[in-house]
Each structure stands twice: as C-alpha cells, then as structure tokens.
Image 1 (cartoon, one colour):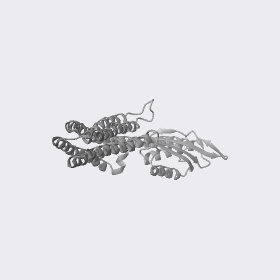
Image 2 (spheres, one colour):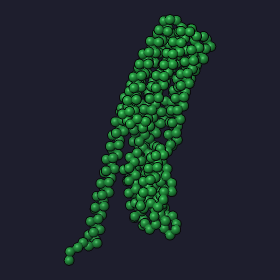
Image 3 (cartoon, one colour):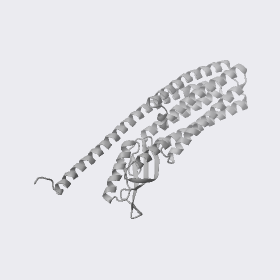
Length: 354
C-alpha cells in the first residue's frame, strides 16, 4: 500500500519550512544591503555638495573680510562673519555624514543615525552665534559710530559682494540639483542637505541685502542704509538658525515617523487575519533611514503558542519588506484565552524585522 507516513510527512515538512525561512532571511538581507548601498551613494553625493559649499565659503569669507577691512563696510563684515559661520557648519556636516554611518554596537544598539541631528544642531548654533549675533553687533556699531566709506571702499566692497553672489549662487544650484535628483522635498529629510540648502539660500539673500545696503549708502551718504542691511542679515540668520535648531531638537528627543507612514503601518497590521485589534502603535526616527516601530496587538482567540510565534514572525517580515526604513520592529503580542489577555513570548523585536 503506497502512501506517506506521518513521520515521513513531518520530516519532509521540517526541511521545507527551514528552506522557506532561510530564503526569506536571505531576501531580507538583500533588501537591507541594497538600502545601505543606496544610502551610502546618496551620502557620497551629499558630501560632494557639502565640500563645494565649504570651498566656496572659505574663499568668500577671506574676500569679504579683506574687503570689509579695506572699505570699513559693516554689511560686508557681517557677510564675512556669515561665511565663516557657514564654513564651520560645513565641517560639522562632514562629521555628521561620517559618524552617522557607524554600525550599531553594544553601547549604541540602535546605531548612530542621530549623529546627523546632533551635528545639525551644532550648525544651527553656529549660524546663530557667529553669524546672527555678529551681524547685529556690526549694525549697531555702524549706527553708533556713523561709519563713512571712500569711493575706493565702495568699489572694493561691491566687487567682492558680486563675486560672492556668483559663488554662493553656484553652490546653491548644486544643492538644489541634488534635491531634485533625490526626489524633491523628500530629500530635505536629510539634515545635512537641508542645512546646506538653507545656508546657501540665506547666503544669496544676505549678499543681496548687503549689495542693496552698500549701494544706497553710496547714493545717499547715509550709513543707516548699510547698518539696516547688516541688521536685516542678522534677523535672517537668527530665523534660519531657529528653524534648523528646532527641527534638529525634535529629532534628537525622539520624533515620531510622519503620520502617513504610521497610518500605513497601522493599516497593514489591521489587515492581518490573525490580528483582532491594534491596541497601540509607536514609531520613532532613529536616523535618516532608520525607524523604530513598536506595536501592541491583540490576536484572535484560539491560537496556540507555536502559532502565535509563527504569526508574529510573519508580521514582522511583512513590515520590514513593505517599509524598508523600519529596521527595528517590536511586537507586544497578546491573545484572548478564556477571556484574559495572555502576553506571548513573541513580544520581541529584531533588527531587520526578522
């Protein structure tokens, strides 16, 4: 009599199940490696953008400082301080790009992704202190002392500012090109790229204000125009520093994923036939492309412990496959047995969602 004994069926099913699990693990690893390659390639492009901005700011800072000393222009000296601040900030951003990619270790099990937010916060502080505060000082000093400039000073100042406008504009175009290449507004989630765009945009506007202030000073002989330009540059820098600092602070203290992503995660959980209800869902950004997902779910009655483990494992794999950024997934699984909620040993979280 032909047939397959239960023992043979069991022995045949076990290797097949192990092979499927191994295949799923390899697929997950491939997705993780592909995501890491894309992230590193994006970081290389961002690093080039930051280096372009750093080179432009260093040259412009020297030119503005020399021109400001020769002309005695408060607006030009304010712009020199602005460029010095931007140069320091580019160094901070280069450190952020390098340090945020370090792998997780025992001391930092969730990785170093938040390094980007920390260095971006330092960049915001630099803009505020070295750029905004010095611009206010120059503006008030010009009003107090009544600074006057020579014709030679006007020419030197306007030439320096014109060259600076071209250099800052070129750096801004490079940054905007990268933003478009990475999908527009979504690319500005990267604090390093966002800071470069903000700095270059502010620099172009600041140089334009300095040119206008110097030209009006030259035409009217009233230093108040140039002092007002310096004060306006200070206000602009303080505002940009506040916006960048607030965003970095929110991310450092544990900002949730955007509502659209959280809604999609909740919808995927609710669509699972074994889930009776999603009691709570928490998300937190751990880095540019890393998100922690923690959910408390109630399962339908009647599932034994082995089945609960299988369901939890499948749900985590589904989340990881659907949302690649969710690389830290924790499920607190309970199922109703005899009218009481029983916490399952499947309430675990594993890197990669496996």
